[in-house]
Length: 247
Length: 99
Image 1 (tube, each protein chain N blue to C red):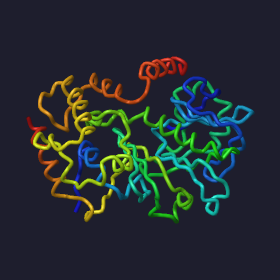
Image 2: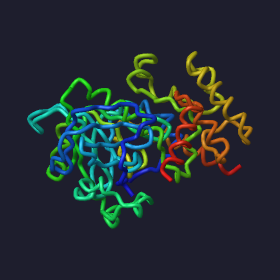
Image 3: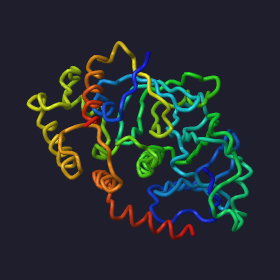
Image 4: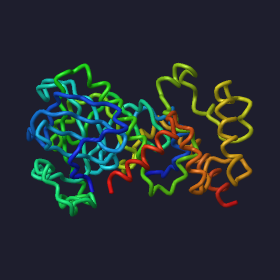
């Protein structure tokens, strides 16, 4: 499920580490500790070894909260799917060997109800919030939903920034977005480059015609992950190593 | 009345979807689309929460990152979207899938 009873904070693939960070779980202060935004999971541990970890697929959203009239301190807000039992969080230090399957007994029946857990990470250094937020965004992108049947991987892994695109292309009228051949001549230079890149990716797959929806096999899935601006070799190596560690 | 859009069409025409209402489980978040990636992870700015009584803490958040897999559906303002264009694109896509 969501809560992993790890004894140790992650040592590899830590994108951001923030000490002197208070964790507040559903309004309950857990104390002051260190937040680890690692590629494999999000963890928080205090100095005595108590803490908790979260799997990224269970984190529905995260955000920076700066409105002190709503909550007295600026913090990183994290919404987790399902209910976390705070007692489990405090008892993470006493993780028994039979918990290595990674599942906790909290909130199994809550998923369908849409129950959530709100967690706040309040760093003493408010300037670190942007880095914490960005690190979480990056790590979230490393854990896409594997059950997705849609051919989401048709596109390169870059993030499509609406504001950026508008600044470059202007707020173009909708009819200028073409997906069929007749519109190719209307593409901008960047659009042509994108098209060539996409067609190159499509050419490596089975389909011959230019189309937006395709059925992707598992092999080509890995190809498209290469399009992400991540050092995939390092990422994959890190993933495998971590799998070994957990056993 | 609602339309189902494939991921490809959504990503293709995302630039026209400036304002949207994102439904995440029991929570509905309205905001301006900042960016979207291939997994439909969504970054929204200037957000407001539809059920502030239930989730009062969300009101203090301006910008957020929403994981694509938890998004139930996304509402787009009908009058700001060229539904004819989207229908054409969806139709083309469906025809190509048949082949």
